[in-house]
Image 1 (cartoon, helix red, strand yellow):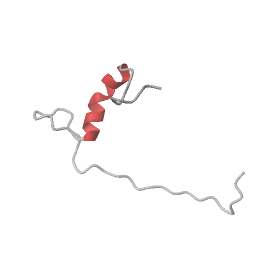
Image 2 (image 1 turned 120 degrees about the vertical axis):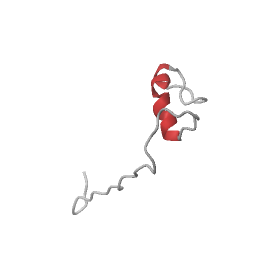
Image 3 (image 1 turned 135 degrees about the horizontal axis):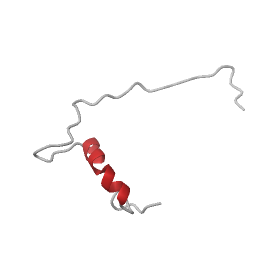
Image 4 (image 1 turned 45 degrees about the vertical axis):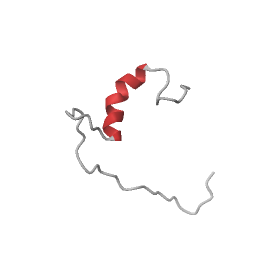
Length: 56
């Protein structure tokens, strides 16, 4: 049970990317977010992800 006199809600404003995600780059220079998005389907099929971390 909460004994506070009133509810208190806090939130962080959104963090927008500096540039749009580009999931197909000719030079392969992906940002960490782009890399994670691209790796998602492969990561779901692997036993240990991210590399070096044992699966749960």
